[in-house]
Length: 147
Image (tube, rainbow, N blue to C red):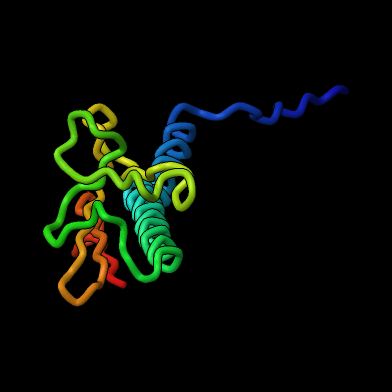
């Protein structure tokens, strides 16, 4: 006598597949909320802005060291936007810093490239302290460095 054993089931039912896909979707959404890529990208851009502000201040003070304590003649007491070039930007072009102190004029990561501005602002206070700000920063309050 030959007996046949029932075959084992090897495929999944539709309900089982939907249940697994639902669990994976829930786990993925939890991970995305925990990582928060928008906040991470904003923090990365703010770190870049902070480095730019430091680079600008270092260039200004290196110029002052090389010129017996005199700051670049373009610096004014009122706050002005730093411009890449003269055209279509209502600010100050730090032409005395170009090439020797700044290899290139740095721009805010989200700055409009068409108007020639950097979205960084600079001023020279009465106390001879230079202030550089990045109003486009994603932190609150905006980034500001004073030396």
